[in-house]
Image 1 (cartoon, rainbow, N blue to C red):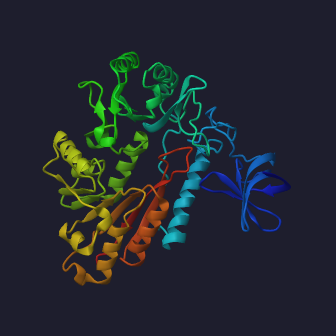
Image 2 (image 1 turned 90 degrees about the horizontal axis):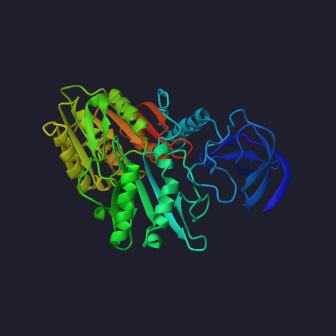
Image 3 (image 1 turned 90 degrees about the vertical axis):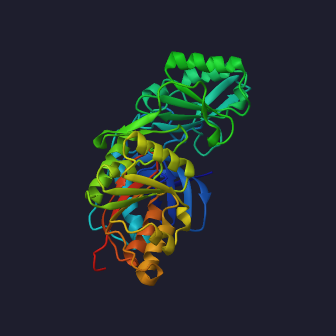
Length: 454
């Protein structure tokens, strides 16, 4: 570590919440803890030919966007929690950073410029996180249990008494959970607790490397009765997750705008932030503007988060997903909501899409695409290949509108480049979606339209 005496003017901030400045000799410096507009001194930790990386050690001009972090475990100090990176930046400024990331990625990686930038989707900045995976560690030397996220830049579990990004009800459980786990016989073989909250149920999935003795199960039942939680056990992979005791209420969330209820298992993929998810589904369907006589395909449909709302608007919806387990769950959710006649589901490897496979699913007027972080490259490429050589799928017509929901702006930009620069679409709108306030995670939504003559 080298203390640098030069005062640096911070020009911008990157997605890891590092201030970006230039030294007098032009070298780029990435500065942890610094915000745009501030003048700071830095302790340099890493030094390369083209750049340096360090931590702010002094400041003589403070940004108007700097705020007091809402959580005592956030910061640059030893033992600080690594779950959040931007608590020191005003939430509105965080959203502006993410909106710029979406724009910059679309242009620099995809050579695509959205015709309209929509207002970013925002929601509560605290207590929003209904899904979380907490590490659990029994510290023998201290004879105590730690439960939380990892420390900043460390494999150690942070000593968290509270967590401001989960609902207060969950935050208030951290210390009682620590005490309960410490009292269990298998306390050093319980590495993880996964949180899954629905509208009515707070589920906790305990990863148990060994079968639990009855005394430990009794402690879990007592905790559940006292705190109103539902315990699930996971002895091995996600497919082994099961209720500690059968019965009780079903874990689910609702999309009241569409009259849909979505039951799910605690290890199924659902959006972390239900407040944002409801708004996102509503915006996606409005942007898609589905008509009663139209057929829609929902690619990477998961549990049917978009498929079932689409089925309340369209003539027919086909949901396609890579996981057979999720497809079965989607079919059951369609049945529960009385939408089986309008929504059907198929399992398919969407990372091996070809023009022939695409054509086999038939024409759809519109698409909803919601892929994982890897994006939808094979799907976009198949569309682009057909646009270049229609003989690959004789008679097949591309959808006139695509709404693409992304959790990775770089793969969105890559796929957008194919759709716009090869397949003949225009990117008519885009925006950031602040699904994870105070973190560097960027979600977004983009709309692509294709003129019928294209």
